[in-house]
Image 1 (cartoon, one colour):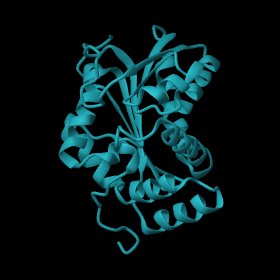
Image 2 (spheres, one colour):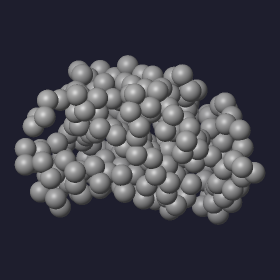
Image 3 (cartoon, helix red, strand yellow):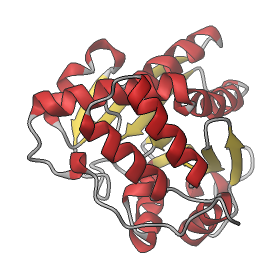
Image 4 (tube, one colour):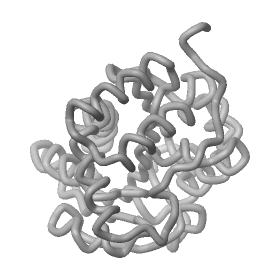
Length: 243
């Protein structure tokens, strides 16, 4: 397909843990704005709404936990909590991020914060109802991406949600234009374009999840060149009927 470049390795500046916290915060603010206006939140919310409604339909699921891996400033968990509240569900949100400074600034958007490597989450098997990551998976090469999805599945008791970027020359050019118009920092400009070119096609994302779990995920495309993939956790799939 002419509008889909080959997936690139790339290097994102914010992947370096030594980045000045003030610089990181500026870029994270840009990411929040980008998510809000360029489709990231819309895609995440669509997947979350479906999953929370499915869980809420279970008479025993009026209290749920949600883990957001690579949470940043936690705008997604904040919305998830409000959606759950409207459905009569109490949702406890847990955010994981490597950057201590960003976790501390997430404030009341999270109920709990954990600084951790996404590849080795400090949670027991099946200990969190809903586990998600948004725009994190593209940071990893294929083998490590499979390992990360497997780790998300290990921790999840009910459902897993993966949100990421759909790779396209059009999306890369669009982000460049938006970054200029929205006055994003040079780091956000660089990392955003790099992220798009490290993104996935719907088929690639489906293959990663099937390799990690052995089952197909529900992969959907959204406006803003976003992808979502949702699937039942292996714990839920393997549970005895009626549990």
